Length: 582
Image (cartoon, rainbow, N blue to C red; front, top):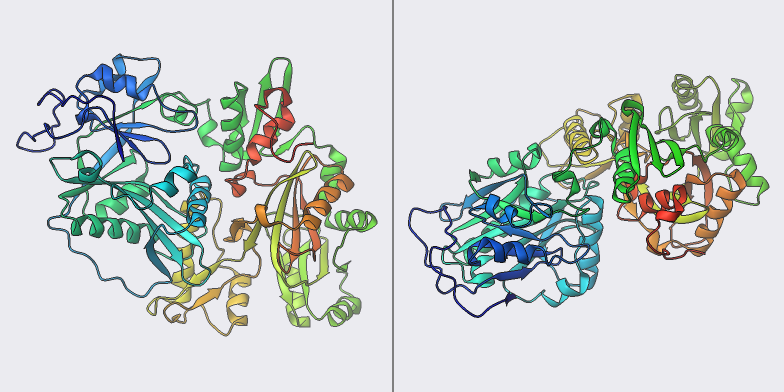
């Protein structure tokens, strides 16, 4: 549970908290306490006799971990012990008094809350933290601690899929370090970006508040970055109040954004570009932002310099890029390489368009050149729908493809340096009814959540295609969807139109891995995102429908897409051979 560096007791009043009217009695607390949390160590500052001892403990931080000293009464003095290695964390602390807290009856919802039970739960926690750019936990340590009373892992599980869509860690201060103030705290709250259910974060916070209230704890604290307006709004809604508490951390690559001046205009880059520039700076590569609005930047190290637009670089030739942009050329080259692709034709307005539809039974209509799912209509089955879909696609490109519709899951495989790095199933946007809200309102709410989860990159368009898909399932936008009823509101799974992404890299069938790498070689492109339609990612059956010359690497965390991308551009900065390297 807690490790004692020394056996002597803390001198009363030597490191006083200023959190209560009276002076707490510290004599029963262990000295120099350290609580192992899986992602790092939590150091209760009130158990340390001197600032020097607290600073020395922070300097023992292990690589890849994030330690935090909390309740630091004199943070400036602690930092002064090692000013080049420590910094004051720019977070705010909020406190929920549990004496007057009133639990809220949970309504019907599509997820359940429970404690950590299995090793797969630990893996799910790390997948969530990876998707949120948070420090992963040490699986063995967390698993060993599962029955201990000082740490509680709360999980939110989707009722339908069984997927873990939220996690939070609660720390019982009495169990951890004999806290005389009978406190507790909440840490590492994360909700899956793809979660369709509202209120997951609030439910986890309430779960831990009620857990600690039942134990007789006086309050529950939470530390949140000062500019995280969404999280602060949630805590204030639940009755948390801001308190004057300070934290100190060690300067490391994980914490770098909190204590360094960002590269000029880097904050204006989108998440796909920032993921790459962050990884480059960690390796000492110079970053120069050229055009933030369009994602252009230059990476330089020594005599080597490369201009990138997100994951598109000067290493991708104009020929390879043109092969991906023209979807007719893409499929022809892949077919010639012996890979499986769907039948297609260019729409020309002749009776042959309708004849192709009749022969295939259902088709997909898409612009010959396009991206982000714009202008695509899926599962077209009537001539009237076909005519309307072709017209929509022509708003994005004057040439339009009609392609055989292949039912199955939408699988994106990212190939870098002709090796598969990540694979994920992309699912169309879905809303869950609450028995009160209209489908239109549910879409708007889900769209706002998707925008918040993706820094504005994903939202569900309220357009004719959404209306068509909703109508095709027997609803109108102003209908009220019954509680817990799930409704897919678009047929395309593109992230930019509200789709969600679910990692399947570890379960990818070897045939899919082999043929994805073969497809990249056929197109002669060093970085690509290949779109497969599959019945199951763990099976060998597939068709390839597109290749993307500028895949969004940020969509595939926690897979090491940015790391492998920088390996390709600057191979001498590679720390060590990665798994699967040949």
